[in-house]
Amino acid sequence: VQLQASGGGLVQAGGSLRLSCQASGSTRSINTIGWYRQAPGNKRELVADITSDGDTDYTESVKGRFTISRDNAKNMMYLQMNSLKPEDTAVYYCWAINKAFTEYWGQGTQVTVSS
Image (cartoon, rainbow, N blue to C red):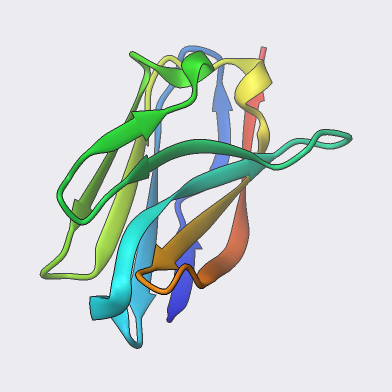
């Protein structure tokens, strides 16, 4: 499985961005797909994920502001980020795990929120 993330950029606080992740390869094996982020000096943290059944999970700090979705027909995943805060600044990574619990990572995309 290969994952290609896009959509990062620079935005002012309160603004919005949408991240996209294109999956290719053995995508039928993917169970859960999601986004991690890592800010300088911090550990990589799970931001949101979505299962093949459409169940979603979010880290507490983004609940009500971020929405994760997936389009299985297009092998795409999205993260709509609204009301962005400077503390959301990080490199965001597309991530997937298959039914054999093998993890896959895409390259990061930088999100910078200015105050």
